[in-house]
Amino acid sequence: MLYKKLYIGGELVTSNVTTDVVNPATLQPVGSIAAADIPHAEQALVAAENAFPIWSKTSIKERTDWMFKLRDAVVENEQHLRDCIQLEMAKPWSSTKDDFQMLVDSLEFYADAMLTMEQEPLEDKEGTHSHELRREPLGVAAAFLAWNFPLLNLAYKIGPAMAAGCPIVIKPSVKTPLSAYAVGELCAQIGLPAGVVNIISGPDHKVGDAISSSTIPALLTLIGSTNVGKHVIGTGATSIKRYSMELGGNAPAIVFADADLNTAADVISGVKFSNAGQICVTPNRVFVDETIAAQFIDMLLTKASNVKVGFDKNADIDMGPLMDEASWIRIDNLVKDAIKQGATLLTGGGKPKGLETGYYYSPTILTGVTPEMAIYQEEIFGPVICISTFSNDEAVLADANDTDAGLTSYIFTQNETRIAHFSSELRFAEVQVNGIKYAINLPHFGIKQSGVGVDCSLLALDDYLSYKRISRAL
Image 1 (spheres, rainbow, N blue to C red):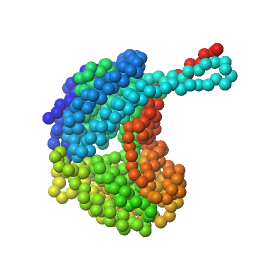
Image 2: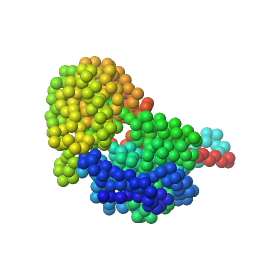
Image 3: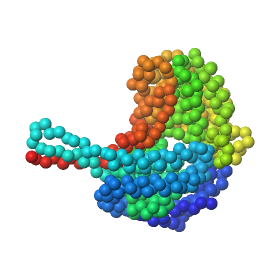
Image 4: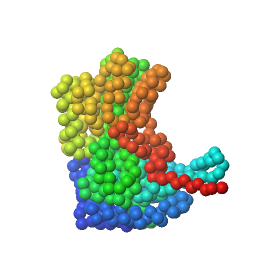
C-alpha cells in the first residue's frame, strides 16, 4: 500500500493520525496518508505567509523556471501519478490521462502567460500626470479541491498561484488525496522554495474550517458544491478575502429536431457516463424535441448498452464506480423517487449485474422527468440521463433557465438564428453549441449559485493578482 506524507514548508511531514484511502471498486484500502489536524493547517498557513515576501518578489523568470522544473518532474512521474488517481477513484486507466495532462498544461500555460504579460497603459487626458498600472501578487491563496478530478482540480489552482507569486495551501479531499500528496513529493524532490506550495488533507470541519477562518489567506478558492461554497464564505468572514469558486451545476441540454443526433447522443452520453457522471458540467436535464424523441432515445439506449463498466487497468473500460456509498444511495433514491412520481425507467437503475462489490451504478435513462421531481431540481452527479420532451422554443428556454445554477448549458441545432437567440438568452456562464470543449486556455466559470471567479485561461490570473496604480505629477 502507498503511504503519503503532508507537504508543509518545503518538507514532507508525518502525522500521529493516518487516514486510509479506499478504492470504491474493491472497497479495499489502497493507501494511507498522514492526516492533517488544526495545528498542521496553521503550520501550512504560516509557512505560506512567511514565503510570500520572498516568492512575491522573486522574478517572473525565476518563478516560471520553478514551474517548468515541477512540470518536468510531473512528466517523469506520469505513471505513478496516474496510478494514484486510478487507485483512489477507480477511474478507467484511459481517463486518468485527462487529470494528469491538465497539470502539465496548467504549469506550462501560466508560466508562459506570466512571461508574456504586458503592463496596461493608462492615458492622462489633461497631460498633467503619468500613470502606471501594476499587477502584483495578491497574497496567500488557500484552495479546497473536489474529489472528482484529483489532479485536474489541483492543476486549476497551482498553475495561476505559482505564476502570480502567491504561495498556496492546497487541501485535497480526504477521499482522493493520494495524487495531490504525490505532487507534494515532487515539490520536495525538486527543492521548491519552502512554503510556496503546501499540501494537506484532513477532516473538513476541522482542517477546512481552520484554513478558511484564518486571517492569513487573501484568497479562498474552491471546487465543490454550492452548499460547501456558502460554508467557506461564511467561515471566511473573519477578514476581507477574495473568493473564487466553481460550484454545483444543473446543466440543460436542448436537442432540437434539426440537430445532428449522432453528435448530440455522443456528447450527452459521453459526458453522462464518463467519470460515472461525476462531472459538474454534465447535462442534468435533457430536453428533446418531441418529434425526434423516440429516435433520439433509441440512440441513447444503444450508447448506454455499450458502456463497459468495471475496474481493470488492462481492459477497455468506459466507466468506473461512484465515489462512495453515500453517493450511491443518494443517486438511487433520486431515481426511485422519480419513478414513484411517474418517470419511466428505460434502462439501468441499481447495480450492474456481476458487479455487486463496489459502488457501481448502471448507466441509467429516465423519460417523463418533470420539474416537480427532485432529480430534475438537484445536481445528480451520477450516470443518469433524465429526458423531458418539448414542442416550443420559448417554453423550453424558460424551463432550461428555471434553476438557481448557472454553470454550463448545451444546445444542439443547425439553425443559426436559434443558436444566436439561445446563446444570448440562456442564463449560464457557458453555452456549448453542437459539441463540448474544455482546455486550460478557455475560461471556466459559473454565474448565479454556480460560483464566482474563473478557472483556466488568462482570466484566472486576475483572482491571484491585485492592481496598483502609480500616478506621478509631471
